[in-house]
Amino acid sequence: MRDTASKTLLQVHQQGQQIRRTHAMALDIDQDLSRGEKLLGDLGGLFSKKWKPKKNGAIRGPMLTRDDSFIRKGSHMEQRHKLGLSDRPRRSNARQFLSEPTSELEKVEVHRIVEKAKQDDGLSDLSDILTELKGMAIDMGTEIEGQTKDLGHAEKDFDELNYRVKGANTRTRRLLGR
Image 1 (cartoon, rainbow, N blue to C red):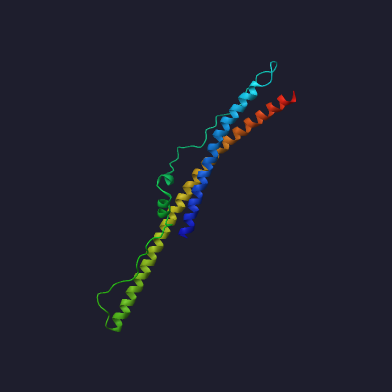
Image 2 (cartoon, rainbow, N blue to C red):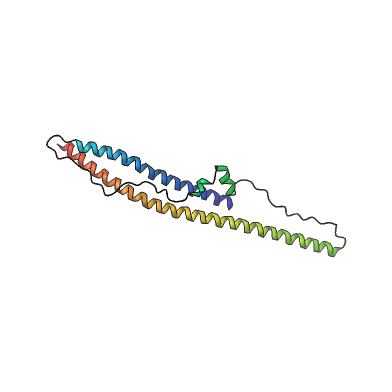
């Protein structure tokens, strides 16, 4: 379970990075579109009215205010270790006794103590794993929440770019129709 949760957490994080990279590309598209709009405004000859593109708002790009502590934690191997992907030494369940039991009653008692210790260790391991999984689930929820906000900001920028491209296409069709 830990391995699957760790892989899922890494994939969710990589997905968030891809969303931010894609949104950052909107800034490049905005610059190229602005140059194209300027050229289209200058075209049309002496008798044509200068065209000015319509803009609803500025393209802001990805928001950088969110604390992305996952990235700042260090190298990829450190992240894998913190996520429990690297091999960890397991606790030893063996118990050492000072002397060998002599009677059957002592042997039964020692066996009961050893079994109880194994159960305690097993429950402790299970508790540790569940605590790790809870932390990973919280991290995934936080990452997905941030991605939802990022997608909302990206959608606004993409809508603005789409609106401006449609306007530039209309201007181009008018110029080609002359």
